[in-house]
Image (cartoon, rainbow, N blue to C red):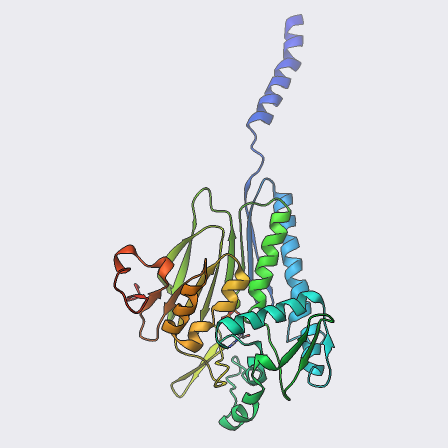
Length: 346
Ligand code: ADP
Ligand code: MG
């Protein structure tokens, strides 16, 4: 009787210790989707517990909202809108963060021979895709001279932006999401997260891997969202895909879509889709418009010169074109065009 009385609490203690030993810390993937920056934001993290995982996701989402407040051209009170309202008359001072991203955008203008140009908005603002509105020939002709990134006067010392040509406007829609994705990854890393995915629209960055294996990221068929053209294994990499099927309308056999050729003021259609791979999403976003404007061959020359950058383009004829770093070994020698082409698989 006495021994039973002693044995009872001991058994309970042993059972408790065993339970603690086998109960896993609840390491799992935690994910969330929100609509911010006019697009779909997706964050997925691998975390030891639900509280930490969800707090990390909260922090990324609230930083996305902060960046949107700063840089949205839809919000009249954003600093970017203040530039558009006043920089034709006087230098406009902005936060260093916004100034630096505008400055960085001119680097992408330089290396893409002007294909990437945030002043495209001087004409671009006249397109409204959901409402099927596009500028007339005459409107394009009169607004086009305002499209030229070299006419932005950037004062590094005072963080001011001044437009040196009348009618100029800027829009960071072509680099802001990639930038926000990189800030999201920085926030997750600072919280000790080692495996994550952050996506904003067409811009994604992967931190670490997926249970010791790369993530398999799909590139969709330009005309059929249910068909995958190819899948690319990725870990610790960023990837942006731009497509003429994202924001568009068709009229009289012409596709009006949201990537604008700064030289013509019209939708740039030399490829149907462009995917860029590089270490950061700011890089991939800054480069994913190039092939639409310059064409696959010219864009490949640029991409192949950049270290750690690769590309997959789908041409208007439906060919898939890969940069040197992604080309299957058998196709490398003697391919004078510097590209490998294959028909898209359905
Ligand atoms: P997402 O918005 O899904 O990331 P993209 O990366 O393809 O899509 O960027 C398209 C956006 O880039 C357009 O909606 C517009 O805001 C902006 N843009 C369009 N043409 C240009 C251009 N020539 N240079 C810089 N930005 C551009
Ligand atoms: Mg993008």
